[in-house]
Amino acid sequence: MVTIVCDTCKAEARPNTEKRNSHAPWIQGYDLITETPSLMQHAIRMLDRWDERRIAEFGAVHFCSIECKDKYLAKNKAA
Ligand SMILES: [Zn+2]
Image 1 (cartoon, rainbow, N blue to C red):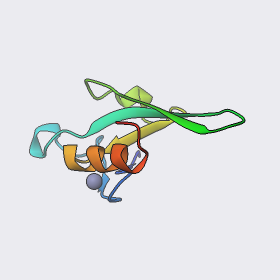
Image 2 (cartoon, helix red, strand yellow; image 1 turned 90 degrees about the vertical axis):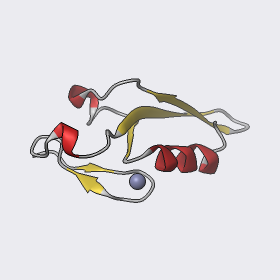
Image 3 (cartoon, rainbow, N blue to C red; image 1 turned 180 degrees about the horizontal axis):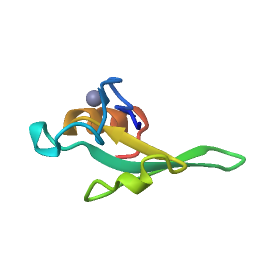
């Protein structure tokens, strides 16, 4: 059983058991943090469609709404 947690508001979803069309689609992306001696950089990339096989991959982030995605980008200054 996979539970997806929104990286901004901590809302939970279980895409394996919930009907996909019963709620707004979640947004999936990657936040790959690169550390250099002078700064820590976020390389955030959003996927254009949900891919369940990538849920548990390194650096994967998930958002329940566009607002949560935008808040995350603003917080990490990587818009
Ligand atoms: Zn959220």
